Length: 178
Image: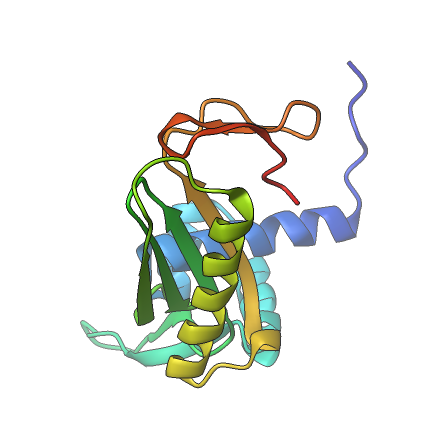
């Protein structure tokens, strides 16, 4: 197995990823918390955090309690940086939810499905209508949606070659990625 050579850019990207992951999952945290929990150096954390703040991905979230000395600033993922949409395609309904970047629910809509086989075009129409509805309700421009995740009930297999199966919906070999 050939080892890839780490460049400054790849190291910086890994550091960004490590810090964003910690802040996303465990935030708010101080810079010192990030140093301890990631194993990165204080200068590396300070430099990357400064870049993340400049880009609007991270924001200050108040001052941490101090035992004396200079107080530490708490950091968190900036909730207004972007939005994400989650879609749950179930047997009887499609639920579409919009979250801010801190994963706070901002809007939700549900479309009922008839029992029995449901044509994929019907489901796709409900998914698109749901996406339009939650962005409108939350006052979010579609361009500010970072991504959409779709879960399908009973999905047994997926992939470009074979398509997906959802027995509850009467689907077999449906090209879900399209």
